[in-house]
Image (cartoon, rainbow, N blue to C red; front, side):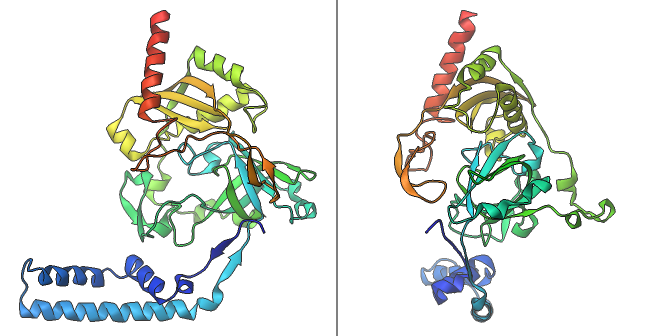
Length: 375
């Protein structure tokens, strides 16, 4: 079979999983009470008899709350479903870093949906009559082990807000939805090409649906919170002459999968960098500095200074050796391994080689210094 994702309530893993989910997501009082009891057992601190009774009562209430929540999970257990992706998305974005949070803000970025072998080409008939499609997908590379009820929103400067008030990937069910412009349909190869995307290479797609006029409410009825409505801060992007020459030189069919010419690709890269891919931590710690993104088959390095970004280097990324496994159509045959993403990591989870590593930064700094001295 093709890729399978089980999307179900936590109770499918047993009562312990349900209790864990309840404690972590909904009920904190029991955990706090438990910490107090552990401290008393170790002789740390003291509480009065009345406060001890209150703590016990709170713990009992918490246990009751967990039991009710568990019964709630069991009540909805029959609603479990198994979803099978209809295909895999092939994107110009190769990693989370540098991928926009909303695709429609980068109108020149490109990718395509590669349908599974058991999906008939007939299912695509009529698609070309629509301009935009909704893409429902899975956040397949989430690394969080705990689901939080609140997340830190980048546009709030790192302040926390309820997860349902955001489009954060770390959700109870890691499902995403995005709107993308339909560019063309290839019935023979069973591919659907899009512009204005925010999906990462290899994203499993659960379904696609055409944009309907009913999806567009009257402008007078639309409401957004101020932190969403305010204009997003962008960087002014410029290119060095050397970087433009490198883009022209490395723009080859063996390197590029999603763009027709260097100009088209340069516009897409500039759009992506203008949204400032740096994390909040990077912005606070490195207001000025060198950064890099993976874009299609290229590595793009740029220097940020104040509200501007200057692209200083473009280079083709080395390709992996061919490997056996499922290809885009779900067949078990030899396939191209794609471009190497330098994913070897240290004990702290940091990449040891490639973009944005100390090794990469030192090498790039030396190269730029030598380039400036020779001019």
